[in-house]
Image (cartoon, rainbow over all chains, first blue to last red; front, side):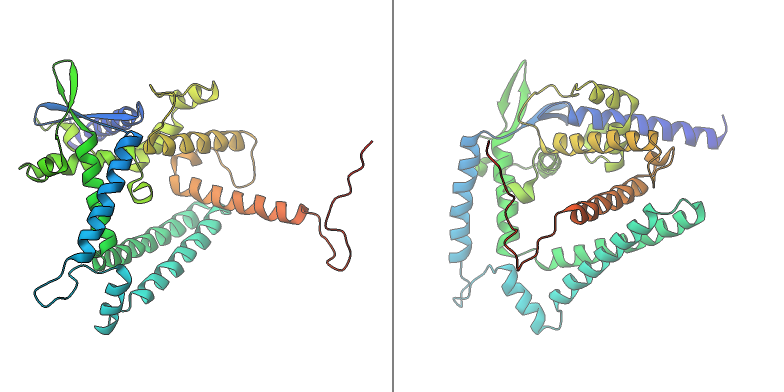
Amino acid sequence: MEASQVKKAKETIGEAIEYLKAKKLISNNSIEFEYNNEVYRIVLPTLEQEIEVENAKNKKLNELLMEKDEKGNAVYMFKEQWKEIYKQRGINLDDYESRLQILTIDVENLLEKLAQTQDRPEIMRIEKKIADLRNKIAEISAFIIEKYKYSIEHTLLFFSQTYLLSLVLEKKKGRKWARVFRSFKEMEKYPDSGLIKVALTYLGYLMNLENSL
Amino acid sequence: MRRLDYTPVIKESFLEKLARSYEMQTLYTHKILPFKNKEKFSYIQLVFLNLLEKYHQLFIDVSLNEEGTEEGMEEDPLRVEAYFLWRNKKFKKLQKEQQPKFDDNKDEKLYKVVFE
């Protein structure tokens, strides 16, 4: 078998696996996965669990607002406050956000152009332009997200996600399913962060975390 | 051998590929959902339902030879995205043009209803 054939065969197998993976992910409103030879699953939260997350989130917000350093300054700040600090340091995040909006409009205009052409070289040219602009958008978005990484909003969102995960992550024991963690505190002490990272990704498939938490 | 389930991230294009597959489109046309659950859909299931509808519509438009469509364009997600953006804008514009126009100076803002 030639190298090119091997490459092609690998690609075909890879595609088939991705196809099956996608099929498995959409098959149910709970997601099963394997990690370190154990079978886990994530289920959609009950109303009771959602209320529990909401209560924990309120409590956490209170904690974040109250936390002060030795000089009595607030440790955590809102996005708007971070924005002001960066502005004083010469980084205007509003400008970056405006650039994002302009680039998004540019992409939309190019998409409209693309829809109305059937000329192959022109299609490729426009698609290349769109890909470049989208790369720029991703770069700027990542820059902005990074700047707000320690904001109260971001900290609270991450807390809600992990808290929710501690409630809905289950492990298969024999023929039954049981919660992996009895509490959020127990999950915080869990030594294998790999499991949490993988499970959080799956949780993101089950729920639109940015909008629902 | 590396266990594949360790890498949960799937490329979105594969979800699109699945949605436009003959298997899924046939099920969708017969109003059969490829889910075990009948309610409480997960986020990815809702995204998938949207994609199923999108490709279902695209295949209809392609078969009707609608403006902006072309055989095989479903293979290019960017062109599909472009087509639907343009199509939606076109419909919105058409809807706006077809809306009855009222003269603000005249009392024409309410439709006349005749009860028999």
